[in-house]
Length: 439
Ligand code: TTP
Ligand code: MG
Image 1 (cartoon, rainbow, N blue to C red):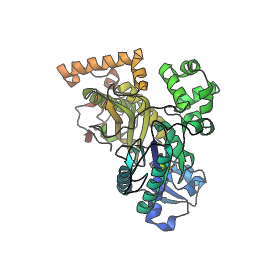
Image 2: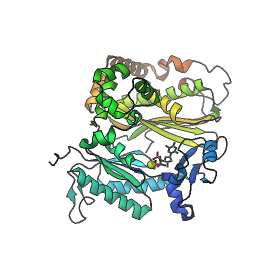
Image 3: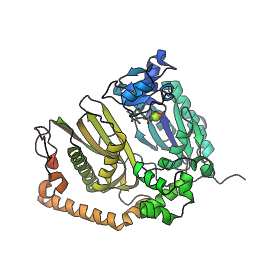
Image 4: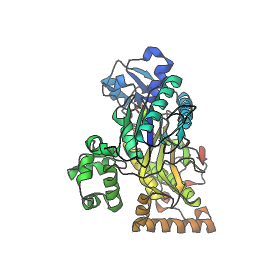
């Protein structure tokens, strides 16, 4: 029996071994060989590596010493951000030929909403076809992969599904060079065997809590009563996880709003090393970003963290929230998790720290998940308090209210140039505050 057409046709595309693949394209002698992008030595980390290096166990964010041990024969390259950004922009232009509704997630991935678009990619240049079914989506996916291959000599993995969550899972199922269509009917077979950590918003802490309750796979989540999950993860999270486990997700693909992103970053004269100082810096940046959101009546779905160390290694990491927010508490929590779980500082100090948000939309415009989160009395109270503080600042000036946490002095070794205390006034070495800035 043919299944009814899905309400939406969403596509997620992620480039394969992106930085490494660009380098291989630039120097074909590297093809077929283990290649690692990153700085060697005690202080380095792996940015990414070719699939040949992954066979030896090398992974992104791994300390370079470990990678050197696992794969001593690998070629190492330091990476060239300018080139990768340029390629990324060209790929985005190709994506924009398929649909105007493109939401870039990072340098090498994006969501596309293809629902109902008349696309040459689904038919032909002379007879563009309206995308109505997942199979139309598959045609667009194949067209995009071919164009990226022909024009950029790179491969991408693509997922096509009725929503963002399933599309993202699908693009990862047959990497590299994959094309997977994941209809809702395929959820038990393809989604349920995956570990809980693949659910959006389940970080290592939540995963550990779920695993303790013998919830190891997404299928285990799907089979639990919502009350169990609410007991383990809190009320709005429990039902959110259950929805995802059943492949339900109604987040829109967020395109160009007036501000695509808001971010605040700061460079320190002396590298920050004290974890407490770093935490205060994260809070100060998150605070600024959240206030900017509230000022414009916006909420954001994705939190970005940017960290640069003294040797100019730069990480950018992002995390999508279960529901959009305009609260510093929520933004900083995500930034802290990214910092803790996805950054390997080693012995290096922090030279630049940035917090940003993207996936911005007007407050109240969103999906039911958002309404659920805002209905949470704790969140509602926090929003009221934040708004009240904004109002006082507007009347009495920026310094009228400063978080107690930001006023605390660093315990030791505070030097000239470490000027993040209270977030203002002491002349940063070279401060960069931008709105909007994350592309
Ligand atoms: P990813 O898409 O996560 O990785 P990838 O494209 O290299 O490999 P995959 O085939 O699994 O998608 O990230 C895109 C680029 O972002 C990656 O090429 C390098 C950079 N990056 C880092 O610098 N550090 C990291 O920890 C990660 C995850 C990515
Ligand atoms: Mg990738």
